[in-house]
Length: 252
Image (tube, rainbow, N blue to C red; front, side):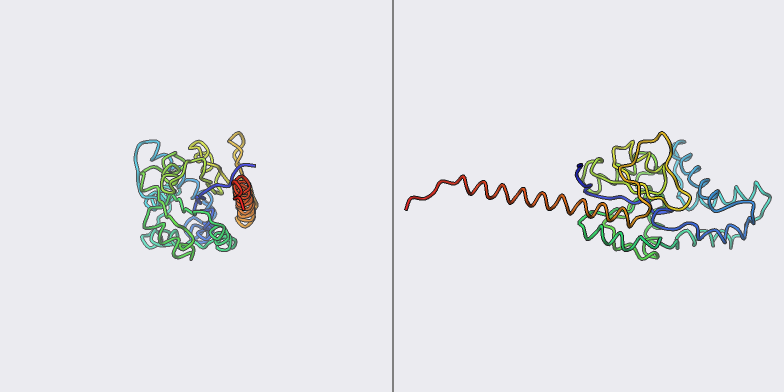
């Protein structure tokens, strides 16, 4: 049995927070011509493209550019008010129902928890505060700090450095196969959460964990850590007893 990770990094958009709440706003602009799933796929596509091109732009700026591009391609006009609604909605995404309890359990189990997001630093802080989950994390890390979007190796390496651990001691949790592919290539362990509509990428490295939701993952990790702590305590106790038995007896 491998040891439990020392720290856990979480993707935010789509893993902890539900992006599907943007669907009514996207539908109001595009009708049936464009879905929220297509929108987010294109946001990630162009975020990756900027990193591959050696460029960096704020994630929310890319999101609005993609919105404008999709509207232009369909001869639809997007008003400044609609753009602002999308920008604000991205900062006010709700957490999935299993998130708060699961994060609390993992924190109580002694794990260092890290929010690792493609969102900009200010947007990430606002997202976590609005969702009511900011307090569970020891670190809020945005790719803005390295100017490279996930799945480039830089953000995962940043998370490991911040936690003062080796990459193999960090577990990356995400509902996106591309995110886990990047984390795996950076040397991290990975955990896949099967959020609605998400699946693994065939041929990619098999994640260390694959669970139906975050609660199931928290149960497995907290239980594993408890087992290792118990074993470690028993070993320490055994060594202490052995050391005492080896001490010379005093003559009476």
